[in-house]
Length: 369
Image (cartoon, rainbow, N blue to C red; front, side, top):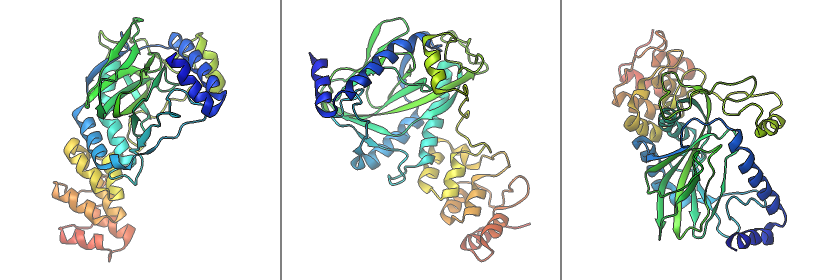
C-alpha cells in the first residue's frame, strides 16, 4: 500500500514516465548484479570515515549548509520521492560556496581513495563526487544498484537531525538483507554496481545529510590481495574488468559503449603529476592550502613530473598571499623548478620585473639565475 501511494504521487505529478523509470530500475536491479565481478566477500563494510575526509566535509558543511539549493531530478525519476519530499544539495563543486571548487573535490577524493583501495584490493579511478545531499522529512530512497561505471562507492554521514534511525538497507553478496544505521562520521563502503541498496522507509526527522563517493576499478592493486578480496579482476578483451563476459549485462553495456572500455585516469593527479596543492597555489586558494597544511602537509612541497612545486605555480600566477603562506610554512623561497628556475625567475618571465610578486620575492630573499 505504501509503495502504491508513493507511485501514485509520482504519476499525479509526472504521468506515465514514472512507470518507465520503475521498469528500468527493476530490470537493472535484476540484470546487473548477476553480471558483475565483485571484489569483496560480503560487498559492504561500515567503518569510521578517515579523519581527513570527515574533517573536510564537516567544515564545508558548517560553513555552507545555509546555502543549500534544490536538487534537480529528471521527470518521473522514482529513485527519490522528490515530488513530495524534495532533496537539496550543498555542492562541493560550487565555487560560490566557502572553500568549494575542484580543489576541495580533489582533496576529498584523494583522502578517501586509499581506504577504498585497501578494502577492494583494486586500483581505483575517481568517477563521481558532486556534493552533500540533504534528505528532508518523509524522504524515501528506492532500492537500486548504481549505473556503471559507479562500482566501488561510499556513503559518508555528514550531519543529521532525526527522530529515529534511518538505516540504509543493503543486500550483501550472501543474499541477506542488512539494515545499517549511521551517525555523523560513519562511512559505509559498498559495491554499488551489484549490492542492492536504498532507504525504503520514510525519514522521520528534519534532515539527513550525506555524501556519495564513487570510483571505478581499473585492475588489481599490486600487493593488496588479502583474504577479504576476490583477485581475478583483469580486463577481458574490450570489456571493463568488473563486467563478466557473456553475462546479461554485456549486451546492454556494448550498446552504450560501441568502442569498448576506456579506463578512467588513475588517481587524482593531473597527467603532469601535479596535486591539489599545485592547483590551489595557482589559483591563490588560501582556504584549500590551509586545509592541505592540516591534512596532507607533504603536498605543499611536492614536485610534479617537471620538478615544479606549488610555490612555482603561485609565483608564475602572481599570488602574493599564496607565496606568503607557503613561505610561512617552511617552503624555500629559492626552490628551483626542475633544478633550474627559481620562483623569482618564473614571476619575472610571466609577469614582468615590476610586478608586486617580484617585489615580494626579492624582499623575502628571492634570487634569480
